[in-house]
Length: 117
Image 1 (cartoon, helix red, strand yellow):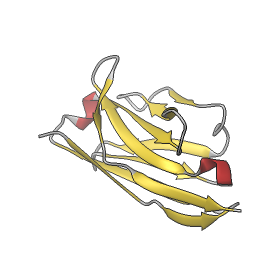
Image 2 (spheres, rainbow, N blue to C red):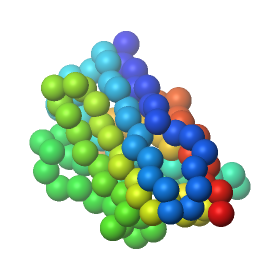
Image 3 (cartoon, rainbow, N blue to C red):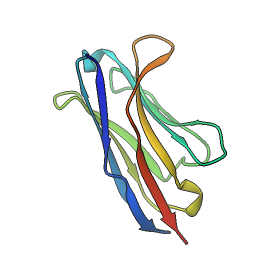
């Protein structure tokens, strides 16, 4: 069945970098738009970054633009989120998601990112 598995989260200091990975299985990965969402305690889930199935246009939330980069490797069925200049406000659970159409309906279990000041 379809499965997304995130990895790479952890505890870092403000200004540090992290790279999250999301390995997909059970889907035709190269056909799916992929995205990273995050949810901080007490806040709504936020779309952080999105990349089209064809490795084309990418979009970012204003809060991460210029600091985060989403990329994908279709040969490895993996999507990445490179995060630099991390801030305490980036602390959240980060989720990988996949969409074949308009809706992201395949989700990973999430990976915790904690940024200390």
